[in-house]
Image (tube, rainbow, N blue to C red; front, side, top):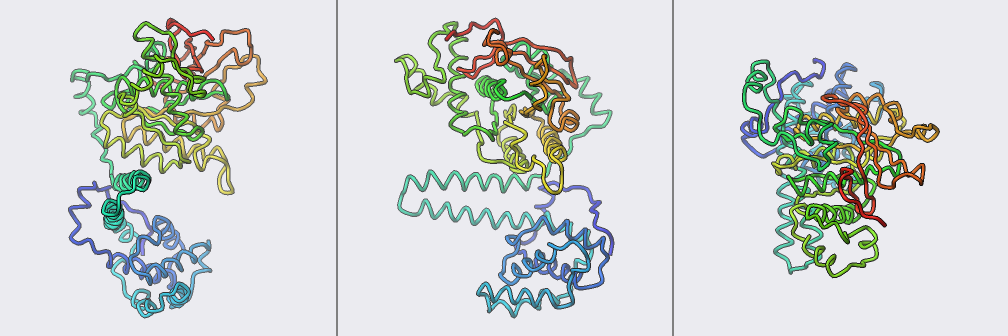
Length: 491
């Protein structure tokens, strides 16, 4: 028996699919479970058991098709809840407990099949072999999941028409299918040898390598704007950090609206505000942008109009016209409590299905599931895991990711209220993973005598450019950030 490290090169989805001759999973299920029983009930080395435990955490009961196999899996899962080899069991004990579990679940007729699995000789006696079957097994499982959700959708449309059921269930089934399929995707690393780099430098610079943010001062600071997916700078993690009420969400919504209107799709993960709240703010921002472009910046639809449903005839007409606006179709909002895994899944899917996905916004870091400290890791360690995963996602998809973050309270006690890198919570990992770190400050928050529109952006880290303070303006009532030269709305 050898220690569990899979040294084989990662295969593409096409490679894995081409090797499938049957959709049946019986061989995988039986071999996997019998190997587990062989190891846990035998004289296995502790390293082998630990390696097997890592593999085991990938699976759940849904990987198994028959009740007796699910029961065996459940028993082994309970065994793995222990941490030492001394807790592993005597020969035959896993099968005995599985039989008891089947009887408790009302599957007495399945008991006779347990021994054929737990005492069956397995062809997969090495950790490496177990690891090698997981990707193919996963594909076969996905096929089963896709068929199940398709059958549910077919039942809905074959049943008596019910608008509420169709609108509620069909989008959820489609989204579940998309997430399931995107999990199969295996990225292939593009050529990064010296010759390909020289070839790239000798070829003409691709068009639209940078997409304007709508903020001239910001474009100048970050290599021309958002990096398009064919840009040498694509795949950046851009951290926008500040104390509460400084405008983090506002600048994110403003940039996302500008990009969705002028270029292509954006994904906005809001862990603080609801989808409807983001939509309201984006509509207000979009209206402000349109009026400013027409050089008739009067009577924009502001947050108080939306909150009170109080509109002039002209505002109502514009609002009606925004139903089919390009930015509405391109602005994808996710407002459920998200883990880094679900964020990665949705971004990977959008990246494949939306060729013009230009940026991803995450509002905000500390609310991502798993970022707080726990019994196993400190807050800094957990946050570092998330920022590293987001940076890897940005590189893998070639898409800039804007990550909003809180800063420590220490800035409140200083005369200079502009945060610095040391004010970032878990600053070491955030600073390490980010390509760009920007801090926001609205001076009027601390001094009411200051201009309420003033917004200072401090570029404190810029891996491919210069740092410094950018001066621009913010209108919280219209959820927009703009260059100071743009006309402002008083009141």
